Amino acid sequence: DEIHPPLMVKQKKKSKSDKAKAKSSKNDSNYSVDEYIEKAEEYVTLFQPDMAVMFLRKALEVDPNNDAVLDMLGEVFLDMGQAEQALQVFLHNAQLRPDVGHSKYMYLGQLHPFPDSVSFIQKGITILQREKARLEADPRSPLAEKQNIRSQLCAAFCSLLEIYMSDGCFDVNAETESERYAAAALEENSCVESHCAMANLRLSQERPQDALTHLQTAFTQLSAIPDGEVLPPFDVRLGMAKMLMEVNLPNEANDVLDGLLAEQDDNPQLWFLSGVASEQQNAFAAARDCFQHAMELMEKQNPNDTETITMLQSRATEAAAKVTEEPADDNDAQNSDVEMQ
Image (cartoon, rainbow, N blue to C red; front, side):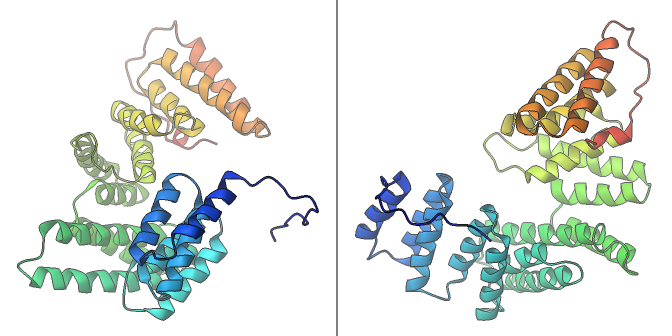
């Protein structure tokens, strides 16, 4: 349980957050629900989740059953690491409006173990499919809305595939369900996420050539996304980089990793993976520098993880020893290097 400090006799100087709360309470009494949501979104972008929670609670005072507000409140709690509070919010929302809004069911799927996780996500898919049918039946429906629904369905099917490849992998129907959901994801939206999901399934089935085909398609699609447009989720691209190395495409893997490093240049795992990809390219000087930088980041961020730090030092030393050697003719990819041990 969270331990709160005892009340002090002396009054403490108000923090900026306290002042913001005091100021906001004077000015927000006539806000609409949409305005409360807008203010909450503003504080989320400012990394002030406690303020976002305050405005969302005020929105619920106006409309206690608002699906969008409850979903956002649960999301903010998740971002704050308060999974139990998020779970209660999503469950409450599902009880209030069981047939409206799919997002709560996607989160409930993440927060529950197999097989309950599957049931929740399937409920969300049912709602999405109903909305998809409504949009397709109306010729006036905007194309963007139709595409958005298909993208959300694709993501939901990918989530089910991931469950059957992890928590549900020992289920008697795991193989059949995995195939079904992978195909459904591709049918809804042939995109980076669905092709990576299928590639992951094919690699687990020891069908690397089939996986290679899907990864090449995914890489082409990712490369074609214009600057400034929304990219696939970070974790999808990270998994894609690992799989590209597994099928011996280090050049493409490093391209993906460069994009990820532009977003998180203090992530030691990304630098490690970039080092592995560089080794596969026989670029040992670059590999040495990547392993060295990953080690330095680990020493700052997690100095007690001596095992990983020692491993990174060893990899940097090994790469440095190969800098002056003649480059080998073959690309000797080691699949076991893709995961940082």
